Amino acid sequence: MSLRTNTLPQYVVARAPSDERSAFIRRTYTHLAGAILLFTVLEYILLVPLRATTEPLARKMMGGYSWLLVLGLFMLVGYVADRWARSSRSVGMQYAGLGLYIVAEAILFLPLLLMATYYTGDPGLLPTAAIMTLGLFAGLTGTVFITKKDFSFMRGILMIGSFVAMGLIVCSILFGFELGTIFSVVMIALAGGYILYYTSAIMKHYRTDQHVAASLALFAAVALLFWYILRLLMELNRR
Image (tube, rainbow, N blue to C red; front, side, top):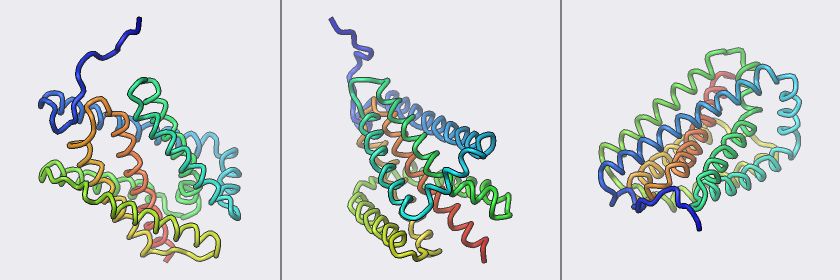
């Protein structure tokens, strides 16, 4: 005999009763806040107490074609984490997927955050990038909640933009050219598009039991936005 942990019917959020819809949105953003907090704690551990160990690793990640391997592994891990987070059979698997993705993002960010923290000469870069990211995220989220517009039409645009961006990143690594400030600005716009898309999907297309998967999607978009805002600030700081 099997035991079911939840006997309540699951709805698409847009069709769920208002109290369930509100509870789902609250759970999603609580998990998102927890993911950001865990990411911050992991980065502090990697950058401060473990710096002597992690800095050589970060240099190896950026050396030669190693970054291509890192990006490839990250994409694979991201795919697995998303599948786990969407599991309808195991809540533990959902949290394992979210945790795996947070750890993968922390490792991916390591080289960039090391440079921003210790080699730019500007201690205000990180907090400025964080504040800008949270402010832009809040503005985009508010836009969706206030207008209640369905941004699912952006899916194709975002996918094409992501493939083009990945192609440019691969070419920059293979042929040794800098992508520059304009690329960072375009990627910030792309990340903003993902925030609009996922926020809209959370309100209309996710099921009420998919708050972990929804928080992972939002966390991925926020991380992308933070990466390119920080990268842009670092480029401007060098001038």
